[in-house]
Image (cartoon, rainbow, N blue to C red):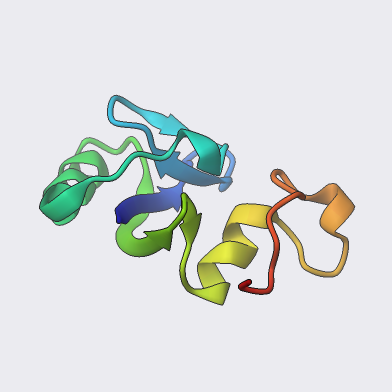
Length: 91
């Protein structure tokens, strides 16, 4: 599974491509298949998101720890995160 992530321009918040827009909730992310780079380029050119990129995901969560931390929020205080239920350790 491939998903697209980036940052919201006004707030800097981590965002996820939903198929029709962007969401702060990782659960709203959709599988973009082989269209990820095209979507990322179009959304960045339209100035709807900053620095979008395609990542691998497993079971709806980022496969790499860096992106899991981005999805969950600060690792020093998970209770302050946007999605604090996301495990930072792969099962």
